Amino acid sequence: MPKSRRILSIPFIPFIPVEYSHIERRGTRGGNIMIHIDDEMRRRIDNALADRCPMFIATVSPDGEPQISMRGSVLVFDRETLAFWERGWRNSAANIENGSKIVLFYRHPTDRVNLRFYGTATMYRSGAIRDNVMSRTVPGELDRDPDRIGAAVLVRLYRINQLSGEVLQEL
Image 1 (tube, rainbow, N blue to C red):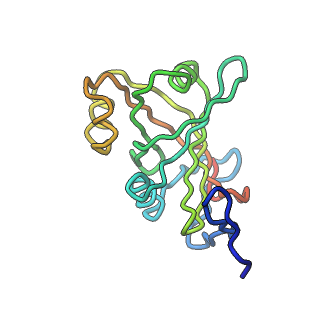
Image 2: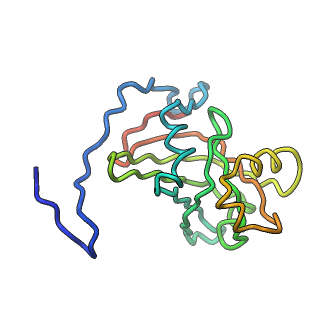
């Protein structure tokens, strides 16, 4: 085992891919099988903020400018959809409203789990879906939106892969 290196007081942890052989490979390019977020992924995503592993989201503006930001409110909405509470109303929100595809990145350095979730996002400023996501958002994130001016964002997934590029599921 190589010695740990320190960079800015953060220990170096070599990347060792986690074996996901227990995950049934679903779908093929152009197939019609749905994405299926399994129980292990759900546990990790729903506890990401508590585990000090907030997820990152990446979007692209209409003129091609990438945007990345952290989200502590990501949750599993259903077996093929992630959701988060949008309260910042900056670049990512504008990109989502303009139809940007989105990537959500989960990283747990201690467990060496790195997952990318690709999808298309839809924003809900009012209605039952917004209320559902708001009621399930972690309190710490809602506390940062005391006037509840935020919106729910649903991300319908079309691919899940590991950081190595190995596709775990794809429509």
